[in-house]
Length: 84
Image (cartoon, rainbow, N blue to C red; front, top):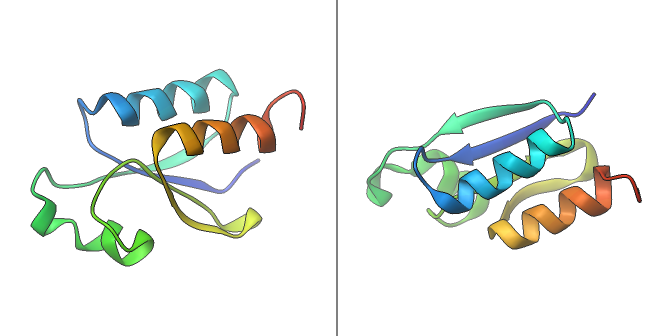
């Protein structure tokens, strides 16, 4: 059981890429939908220091606000994939 949180935006292709990887790996996660307006994304900014999405939080592994979809996908594969 994982304790993952994902800050995302519906329709965002980068967020979809991360969600697809989470689903592929069979990982449970809590989704936090952020507002469309960057100026209203205070919660994700507090977590990651920026307003872009996706952002992953994995408290069990000490990940407090990883951004960039490619980095997140790589992290998920290395941490939770079959090679982990």
